[in-house]
Amino acid sequence: MDHLLTLQDVPRAWIEALLDRAQAFADGVAVPPALGGVAVCTLFFEPSTRTRLSFDLAAQRLGAHVLHFDAASSSTTKGETAADTFRTIEAMGVRGFVVRHREDGAVAALAALAAPGTALVNAGDGRSAHPTQGLLDMLTIRQATGRAIADCRVAIVGDILHSRVARSDLHALRALGCRDIRACAPASLLPRDATLDGCAVTQDLDAALDGADVVMTLRLQRERMQDGLVDSLEAYHAGYGITEARLSRAAAHAVVLHPGPINRGVEISDAVADGPRSRILAQVRNGVAVRMAVLEALLG
Ligand code: CP
Image (tube, rainbow, N blue to C red; front, side, top):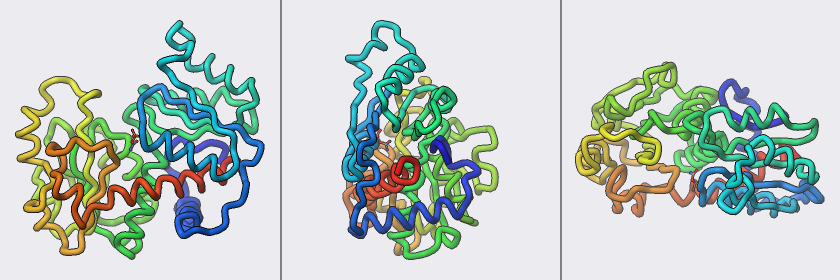
């Protein structure tokens, strides 16, 4: 694989090998300087906290030089295109690019311009894909449940329509053979294309949570949303917010994931986000290990 742009149609064996390597990094295996002498640029045209910083840390741990591209102080503010920005940085000898962009397909478009030996990782493009988030979520589920993903009952709840995280999670869950995926949102936040093929789709949160082993909660993406898709934040919380009371329908051992950043009191209550079922900070920790494994696989 030259680039990691999506998890769609990625072979199960590749994902499992990558998760095994990430687990070894998480367990503290000796880290080789696999990226010694390699320059990696975090090229983010949209804001980020955990993705950008965890890629930064992952690349540094592997021995890379890391360059940050700050869109707000860059020449894109003078009209330079993303393609010219990418070519300019690549011409400096940078071989690894971690790219986030608001437009669907923007990272693949840059990858098509890349010279042989340059690798791009999609750190989130529009609503399309966020593959390393999908991978770190699978690692977190594996750790939290102690089960194969194929045997987990997984509920994905919230703003699926705008969520690249949901799409990459669905790609990974299907690749790993998950047989019980429930997708739950108000009708206005359910995609009408093939995104949810094979899922049990419902607008009833209690039905989605019934006996679930894993609850994947999504951020309400107000920055991508037209007015009127939800009546009010209070109404959304009442219908689709994950609270301790609603979680009583899930399995006793159920765990809760959220990719962050959290809208507290909207899609998830404080008590759940900070409570014993939450694996939100484990997701963040696993993000570093997964991104080390990805960078090693592409650039090592
Ligand atoms: N989960 C995620 O992509 O978070 P950031 O936007 O903070 O990177």
